[in-house]
Amino acid sequence: INYYKIGNGPQKLLIFPGALGTAILITSLGQVTNYKPLTENFDREKYTIYIWDPPGYGLSRPPNRDFSPGFLNRDADCAIALMEALSIDRYSMLGWCNGGCTALIAAAKAADRVEKLVVWSCNAYVTCQDLEIYETTRDVYAWSERRRLPQFQMYGEKYVSDTWSGWIDAFHKILDEDDGNVCREVLAKINAPTLILHGSEDELVPIEHAVYLHDNIKGSTLEVFPGGKHIIHFMFPEKFNSLVDNFLTVYKIHLFAGSNNLEF
Image (cartoon, rainbow, N blue to C red):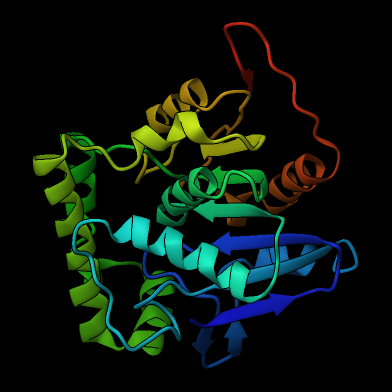
């Protein structure tokens, strides 16, 4: 398993990339992390950041990506095992998009080790409408150049096309065979203070998914970015970093009878 370490601070963070994400993208301009807004601006004396490539992504190849049933659970187990191998007993998790789904599962599996959880632009279930959105992205040659070219450079055109189609097909199977359940059952098992971030105009994961997470993770806080799309960490880096840094540094659990914190 490939991982990338940044900083030497006492607070340990494990970052989960999205679908086809990678710790490092090799481009004509050199190495660029998918989480540059975080890694460049977080205090490296406060945090040690670990960004990892799940099996089949980035430099964790071979093997090729496997989207057979249970793939997110396997990723979660792998992430937990990675931190065990690094002898890190307590850490926080940050996950974007599909990586957020994996982080939710991992936070439930390793509830005694996860200090805090931050997820953004992710979901615990899929609907027919969601799959219609995913299908509009199946043709990778129709992606914007900014999105397409780094992926092609990293993986090659065929691998990107095959893997992205495999990802969409996997969620069709989840919808058809599991009633769209991605990870609903783990939400009640999450004990870590949880920050949910979402763009109000997310074009891939509608805002209803963030509200569902907020309603089903006890003591969670939801922050909505007005006008924000799927990559809020790039669109609003200062606000995003400030919210996450503050949450990781000073956030205290406040449980309110019958409701959680909801902030816009």
